Length: 407
Image 1 (cartoon, rainbow, N blue to C red):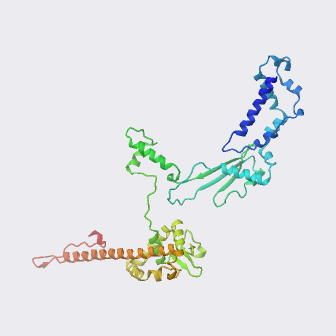
Image 2 (cartoon, helix red, strand yellow; image 1 turned 180 degrees about the horizontal axis):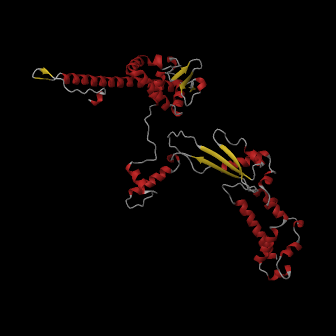
Image 3 (cartoon, rainbow, N blue to C red; image 1 turned 180 degrees about the vertical axis):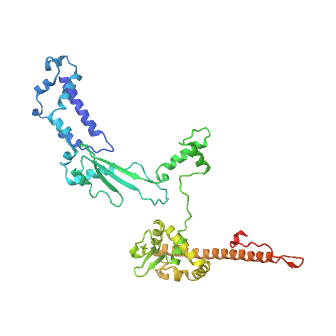
């Protein structure tokens, strides 16, 4: 009996220590705090009841001929069904949490949300990814009436994440599950290393194919497929300049704030005008980062098509002369622009003026080529119509294209 007692105590201590020492990454063990407070009183058990559970001819006297392991099993079987053991074992999570203060319960809820965060990491490598992440928490409670539900209030940013509660029907735990979706494949951290390893293996002609579909692999090779987005030429400066020229970007002089015409960002009540910033450089940064460039570029294209080539030519001529004074809408006096605090604004305005100068030159060259094509086209037309044979004018078959490039 003495040996059995020592082994039982040793087993109980090992079990207690393993619970205390074992770190569960995704679990919060609330019962750890109760371990030191659990002990048996003399009136928690009755020796006669224990003897009655033994399936032995002479009861406890047969322990002299019984192995220590079997004796320990008898004790474990009996103690697991004691009222005190059943009380702890059948205690619901709601009953456990009743003993905690409100701020302590909210801290447990916060830790639970933190532990449910996804293990994957995102890295878009500087590429702009405009799609919104699907960020969703699902909390499984013993029932929808669980008071612990209130502990999550204020822990979720409603603008970024959503939370839903479900009655899981499991009394002894609360489960938190988080869903995140999705980013382009190149935005998953580590994919670049996987791609490099894949390419190294593919260079070896004897290497096994790691693709799941042979036809897909062939198509990818033929089309030089890449998971990385194609780099788009940065035309934000040109769109910014022509947005100012055509009135899609303006300086509200009363508020001293730059605004942009945007059906995507603006409010219909404000005639779709969307505020950027008081400072020109910050306004330009917002313009680039918030995905407005493509929308304004479409507005500019439509405006040019409506105006026609002659009106556009006249406008460009005027812009060349008067961009800084009439179109740029600068809200800082010229003598102030060279101060250190306005350095980035001055640099932006210089870039705008340099762009206009270079654009005018290219535009003039393209116009010269166009009119040269037209001139030579007309000459070709007139020559072909004046072909003569034996001194007589004979009309020739003439084809004149309105598109001079086709000559």
